[in-house]
Structures are given as structure tokens and as C-alpha cells.
Image (cartoon, rainbow, N blue to C red; front, side):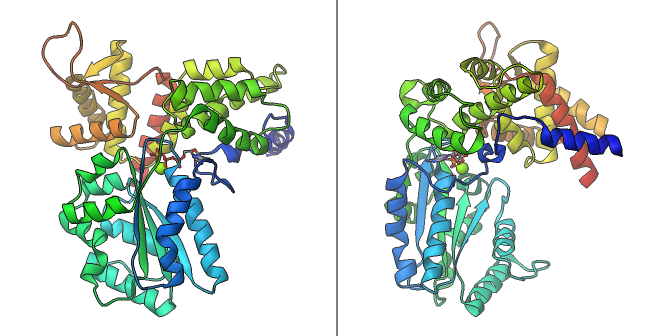
Length: 416
Ligand SMILES: Nc1ncnc2c1ncn2[C@@H]1O[C@H](COP(=O)(O)OP(=O)(O)OP(=O)(O)O)[C@@H](O)[C@H]1O
Ligand SMILES: [Mg+2]
């Protein structure tokens, strides 16, 4: 016990390059956001009626842009600020943020909404329609207005039934006589045409009028985003300008990167971690460009992102990911075929006593992993005959990932 006590004390006392590492976590919502004034202004314009004339109309906005372009953080900051503004006018406007890649169908979404609103609606045994009615009734009784962000809406569009999509997108066509207390912000990754092609023409053309687009970040924009965080996350003088310059050029859209702020922050975080580790060993006390280089060659950032998302994947998707990693490891190649992956997957299922999912389901899971940018796929490979899907994994080190996957699989099996 005293050993543990000492361990804790030493850990707390040990010097670190960080003042507050949590500022670099992906879920941290900064007090201000940069370079998104246009998008915030558009949101304010669209949602003005909700404050000026509550209940008169149900506003729907659609935010679209590539990965890491600030869609989620912009919606969250807007939601926080508009509910504050409403509250100062005596209006109870509550902001709710639901991620559709976690809450995949409408009943789950409604459950999440009611949990975040903190309102007591029993959901057992109720149909979706009944849950909705109960929600509307409670909003009415408590005099609450809401803005619900459905983040990663592309997942919902893809997975939901026609009926559920209709219910969400045309809510007040169904509940015609209700006071309009629910407003939506839909957030989707990709391009407007992508989303447009998956909606029916009436909702599509309505939403396109309320479309707010996000461009990938340029390197000078990423530089200010990084600077803001550095000031809060690290001790003064630990991260030099040359480091931030290097990271923002590496990730900036105009300098050859993909303009992804999450990646820029993850690289900074991982480089900080390396410097921190060296500090314990009595070496560096500053983050250097060399740390960044090490991070980038080890593809740490994709690891960081990956570890965040893994938690939300269903057991069999994780088993398939493990099958991919194992097959890559065993073959020593950078891509393996679906056939090999499926064989390994079935073996893994046998080991843990799970019934393997069928071919189509396996393929869907692989597509989902690709969509989440966890894996890479190709349809043909030079020197190999025929066409098949081949799966690869970039440059990330496989062993730490395997350990992590094993742990997750164990946890998920226990929960069952
Ligand atoms: N303008 C900004 N100012 C400050 N931080 C930002 C800004 N844009 C993005 N970030 C930060 O970068 C990370 C990625 O942003 P965000 O999650 O909003 O991207 P996204 O567009 O929703 O990406 P995805 O499509 O992957 O969901 C977050 O940690 C966020 O806080
Ligand atoms: Mg997002």
C-alpha cells in the first residue's frame, strides 16, 4: 500500500512539460475557436428566429466539410453560446449533441437526447413514435426549446430506415400542430454533393439552402489553432515556434497536408509525450522538431485517433480489425486480401467462442473501418492476379495496437 502511495506521490510531483494535457484531448472544447467566424455568423443568422420568435419555426442547418475541419467544435461552441444568450433573455434553450456513429438508430438517438436533457421518459416498451410523443410532451410541459446536433449524420443517413430518416428530417410534417421546440444541426463529413445524393429531393433542396461548408485548414490557420492550445497545455518556452511551424506546414492544406486540425493537435500532443518521457530519463526538457519527426514516422497521430474511436466499435468489428492486424503481421506484406482476413477472423471467433458474422456483414464492417480512416483499401495489387479487396494499415506499429485490441475484446466479452 505504501509503495502505491509513493508511486502516486512521485507521479504527481515529477516534472512534466505539460501544465494541462487535457487541453490537447480531442474532446476538449476551447473557449474560442479560430477561423470559423463565417460559419458561426451563418449559424447565428439561421437560428435567430429560435430566440426572437421561439416555437414559430423549426430550424435545420447542415454543416459539411472534410475530416478535422472544425465542424463538431463549431457546432458545440455555437450551441454553448446560443443557449447562454437565450438564457439571458429568460428562454430555456438547451443544446444537445449526439454522435450518430455511436447512437446508430432513432431509438438510441432519442434515448441519448432525453439523457442529455435530463428528462425522465421511460423508454422500455415504447415505440419510436411513442418516445417522440413523450419527448414533445415533456418539452411542452417544462417549456424547453432545444437545438439537437446530429453529428456524423452520414452514419444515420446510411444506416437508418426510410421511415426513421423521414421522421427526423420532416418531424413537424408529422407533428403538424405542435409548437416547434426541436431544431437541428446536421453534421456530415465529406462534400455537399455526397450528402445531397443520399437525400430525397425535397429535404435535399431544403437543407442545401441551409448549408454551411467547412474548408480544410491552411497552414497559417493551423498555426494559430496550435498556438492557442500550446499556451494552455505546456509550460512557457517548452514548445518553440519552429515546432509549430513544422507541424502546421506538415498538415496545412496549402502545404501538402489534408488540413486536418485534429491531426495537427494529435501530432503536437504525441511530440509532447515523447519530450515528457525523455524528461523523466533526465534528457530533453523542450519539444523539438525531431520529436515531431519521430512521431510522424511512427504514425502516432493515426494511433491517437484510432484509440479514441476503437471504444465505440462493436465486438465483431474489433475482431475483424484484429484479424486485419494479425494477417498483416503474419504475412509481412503491407496489404492483405479479404479472403485471408476472413479466414483469420473466423479463427479468432472460434477462440473467443463467438459465432462469426456472414460474408456481407464482414464486408460492411471493413467498409466502416475504411470510412473511419482506420484502414486503407485497394481493389487490385500489382503482380497479383484477379480483383479482390486488399486491406492495409499505413505505417502504424502493429504490436501496441494488438495489445490494445486484446484488452478491448476482453472488456467487451465481459460486458456480454
Ligand atoms: N477553429 C478551431 N479552433 C480551435 N480548435 C479547433 C478548430 N477547428 C478544429 N479544432 C480542433 O481540432 C479537432 C478537430 O475538430 P473537429 O472535431 O471539430 O473536426 P470535424 O470537422 O468535426 O472532424 P470529423 O469530420 O472528423 O468529425 C478538435 O480537437 C477541435 O477542438
Ligand atoms: Mg466531427
